[in-house]
Length: 222
Length: 258
Image 1: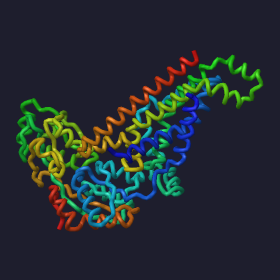
Image 2: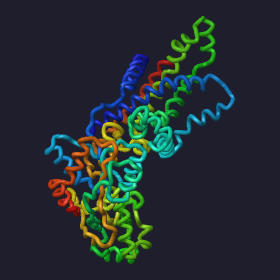
Image 3: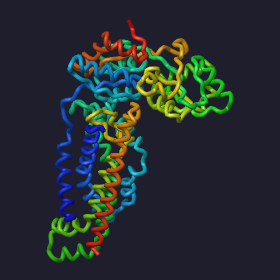
Image 4: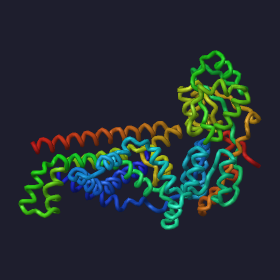
């Protein structure tokens, strides 16, 4: 069992949520409430990472931020390390790959709030911020929670883009899913087996948690 | 209750997320060709026992690692499976100097237990299986990124088997993956690194024959220190040219320069 890899995976999952959740709440609500021209296009754009092969994302990140690109060289002279092959680079890749997982459930959550409720809250004299914090967020909460859990689970399972953008650096970019591949290549089937079982358990537990939570919310609301 | 869980979740992730920079002080990272899997792990352990400092080794195909170095991967030393890839990096100005040849690798043909393939150094057994039309998959490393794959291709060409066997080939990303295909019974066999079949557990999995060195371009394996190499990586580079490292390399089937 590679504990360092598990740690990297958990950090990556947590970091991705921390970056994406505020964005997802803002953007998901925007898509749910407002109608604007080109909305269909924006929604498609947000969903693209869902159907795009990870290699496409990996390719663009390497070409854009690699040590041979002007942007990558600028970044390197500022920070002293390229974005690819670093934890921060993985975080960026993972944040992009997870946009649909965070935006869609949150959008559905806000869409489920009837506009009457929002209007009533406004009539009661609540400020927009109070309406958002005390009425909308509690009602959209199941969506937000689902988004966080799905993002976390999906990040733990990310493989292709992690290997491409991160390489396989222990303690930095070697996540649990990459460590399994690495151990397989090193003919260490035992460790690979232990880690594969760990990820399987985490995945099943996460999905059970999502179902249980959303069901409980449904009951309480009904 | 539910809401409290949620608030807690968001709060912890924000705290964790902002402090996510993973620890600073780490041993230098060495990039190594996959054929070195067993040998270099042993040498790194010996280095740690002798000198008290350690290195972190990452294995991959030489071509993949070269590409990663060009894109800015933070390796300090690169042990390739050939000379071409290190030379390419030296030409691009990414290395300290031209480096040295540290080992000469050998290929073997391997057949797992129960395979229809019989192994011999001239590949007559392979030719027979192909002619019988009963050949299953045959594993080599991807010739584009793995020098051992390239060597395998030239052996098969030299024996006039390349065109016939091409539809049957499975390509491993690295020579280690090719060895995995060849030894787990997923293929009738394969052309893999001698150093890998000498590794633990391989002897009982099948039979092998060592391919004559003259049947392919010699697998002269060069290593280079990269520009960012620090003191420990430099020490390890010197250690690899010392007598104890050479003894380990020899034990794992490599030829060693005098």
